[in-house]
Length: 259
Image (cartoon, rainbow, N blue to C red):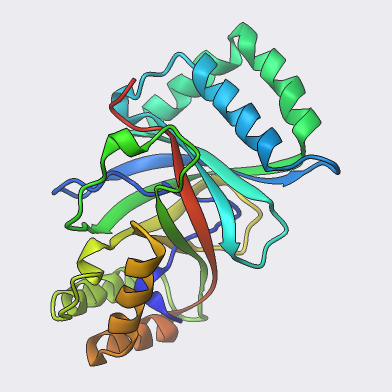
């Protein structure tokens, strides 16, 4: 398993390209993996989600944000993934309750049904395990230009392995990352993800890795995979788990902390 950029596609998962501050970010993501109805396309998705964003009362407070992922290189039954991020479970549930009791909920539900054949949902807990050196500019959000490249992995523990083995492997990986000399790898952000509610089962944990663009992704991956440290970290993860991966283009619809 090429662990460098693992993440849980967990049937839908994590923050597109999350905030890249100097401190790790721990938050809660609600994810929706969606398959389009016949005749629907990317324009219909954008129009729907932009309407949801513009009608939502959330202003980026309490860590609230909205994001979209579209497939770049991925084998999946889904056409896109969209989600929200919140500071914690309480904020997630409060936001959900507020939305479900609003008038816009029933109106948008009709539009969602018209656009999507189905959307599978889940809630995941996200812990940032590697903080990149290149800050994200919030001014880049809100448009239809990709804000970064996201590689995801949905992982299952091998027989005899448990969450303790995974966290031990993550700790080892963090130590190895510090030893690799790579300007592009320094732009990387990594998140350990664990399921909280929902999903279709079969996934014990995941990882989300983000780079600001395809070039830094390619160079960073090359430097990692060619290093003895990266190979050693991969071997630790291979011992404990098996993963399936996906590569996505990520967009912020509403960036946390902004209006």
